[in-house]
Image 1 (cartoon, rainbow, N blue to C red):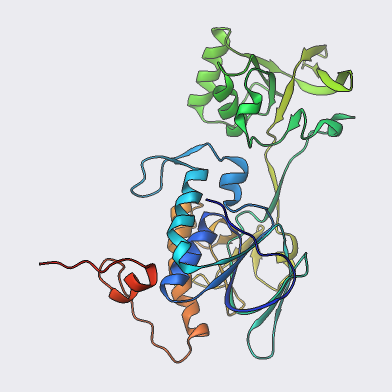
Image 2 (image 1 turned 180 degrees about the horizontal axis):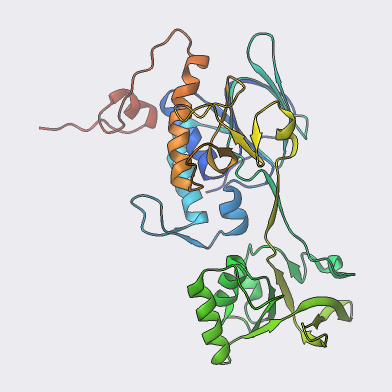
Length: 355
C-alpha cells in the first residue's frame, strides 16, 4: 500500500506523536485508534515499514500469530490496511531533532525539515535507532555505490543474470547468496574467515552448493579494485596466505551489518542503557519522562525479548497508559473488537447480529 507523506513544515497540534514507522510504530496507530486517539507518525526513512522493509522486504517472518509466513513487506502492507480507518498522518524522510517539555505539560517536537508539533504524548518506536549499513573501506569503491555497489537489496530482479560477489558472514549475506543461486549468472560469497554468524542450516546449504559448483566461497578481504571503462570490473582479494587474487564481477553486495545510533534521542533526558531506552514499568512502558513511552526494539526492561510480537503487546499497554494524559477526566473501559459496537463504528465495520 502507498502512504502519502505530508509536505514538511508547518505546526501540528495533536494528542500523540509516534517516532518510527516500523511494524510496532504502525500497530501503535491501531491501539491508539481504538481509544479514539489520532496520531502523527514520523520516520527518517522515506517509506514506512522500518528495518523490515528497508533491509529484508522479501525475507520471510514466521512468528506473527495466526500468520504462518509473511515477508516484511507483506506484514507492513497488512498493518497499513488494518490502521487505515484511523487516518494517521505521516511525515517521512525527516528525523526528530528536538523534544522539549512545555509549561502546560505537553511537548514541543521538531524535525530536521522544520516540521513542528505540540503533542500531549510521544511514543518512541524507533527500532535500533537511526541505523546505517557498515560500509566497505576500500579506496575508490564509494564511486560505484548505487550503480554496482549495494548495501541492501530493494529490487532483486536487477541482480538476476549478473556475476555477483556478496561480502559478509551473517544471515543477510548467506540468505541473499542462497537466494541468487540459479538466478544470477554466478555467485561468489566472500568472507574474511572460515567461521560464520549465520544460521547453521544456511551455512550447510551454502557449503553443499559450493561442493556442487553452483556457487563459490572465497576466504579473504577486499584490498583493492580494478576498473574498466569507468566501471567496477574486478576486486583484489587478499587471503590469509598473503596472496592477492582478482575476482571479476558485475555487481557487489556488502552485508557487514548495521551501525545503530540513537542520534538526537540521546539528548532528550531519557534514561538510557546500552543504547536502549529504559522503561519505568512493564505496566505501560513509560520512560522516566512522564508522557513519553518506548515500545519495540528501542526499549529495555528485565526479561525483554526483541520480537515483533513483543512490540505489539507493548504498544497495546502503552496506549492505555497514555490515555489519562489525553482524556484526564474520562474513565477508559476495556472493550473487545469482537463485541463492541463502539469499536465496530470506529473500525467502520458492521456489528454482527447473532440469533
